[in-house]
Image (cartoon, rainbow, N blue to C red):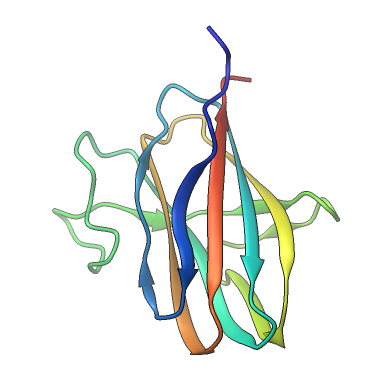
Amino acid sequence: MRGFTPEQTIFNAKAATGTGNAFLVEDFKTIVFSYGTAATSTLTLKFQGSISDTCPDFSASQSVTNHWDYVDVIDLQSGSSIDGDTGIGVTASSDFRLFEANGGGLKWICATITALTGGSATLKLKLFET
């Protein structure tokens, strides 16, 4: 067994608000994200997770039948924690960063773009057993 997955795409050059592809992560401990925006991007990126047996609808509101929440990530450049409810904001610039989330206990991971007024974003992930 390799201990990691190939790179997966949550969204590619997404130029609208909304949610990307969700991934099953329950067999992995570490989730690493590669994030990039276009030169004129103004948006907020938020990461979402769930422990539900079936994949929740990350594009719908949280409810008693749709359990998910925003999750904290670590900026791999600075080591700083980014609160899930706050997310990562970009204002009229390019941004290329790596983030890590602790997958221990999560079953599903996703991300959503909010507050977009220009540009686009690409988000990929790779899953690791350790």
